[in-house]
Image (cartoon, rainbow, N blue to C red; front, side, top):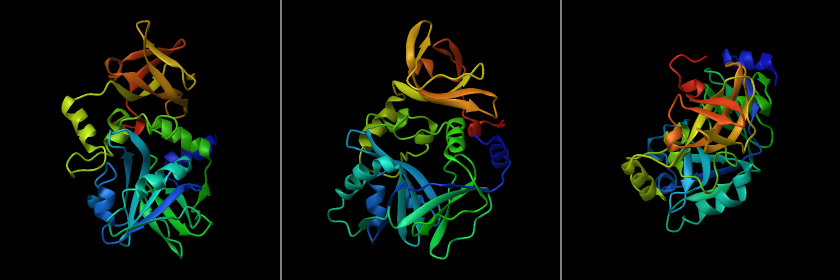
Length: 297
């Protein structure tokens, strides 16, 4: 990883990460908002113009079928998700479009998306638009551009730096922390922020609301700090008092903390902040992701 670029990025300098190829859809029509609000966990009706929200897409039993970033622009909605969800999530969303006056269009080959870090709004492309969205835990904007060429503002950064930011901010990723077996309330604070408990019915809402009324889930995605610069491999078992307490899902090194970090699912009894865990001899502590701390490092 380019540590100089990392330090400049954290300091607020503009850098661009090209998001595409991604699975991309455009949704429009008179019923678009009402329809989409009934399909995802976030409150789409509350989404302001040229803003974006993160949401889960669930089945009737509340299990995740995908996760999406939803942007509202010019009376339309633009959705993007991991490319691995392209063949499954599109048909899942489309099958509920029955009597709705709305059109869901796959635009994966028609648009490009990049993300520009920094508080300043970047210049919109000639054919495209800019969406305010802190998708990586830092201030930033998504730039949607018609055609294959993603917009670049400032220097570009690589995927390994993005992975470090993702881990530092405790952001789950499809295929690592998020799968078809995941219930959104167990996938950590980022997913909890993506759930509206007041907007009304959506697919999977009954199960998710019942979990809230119970008050807990059996496992929780947690952010883990290592006592050293070492970090465990994904798939490593977490233990507490010589008993299995969970599993590491992703891990790496944090330059800001100067130590190893990880994400993993911990049993409810081992998920409180400050809990000490072991991962094949490495000492780990359940902690708060960096951007959620009162005084970020």
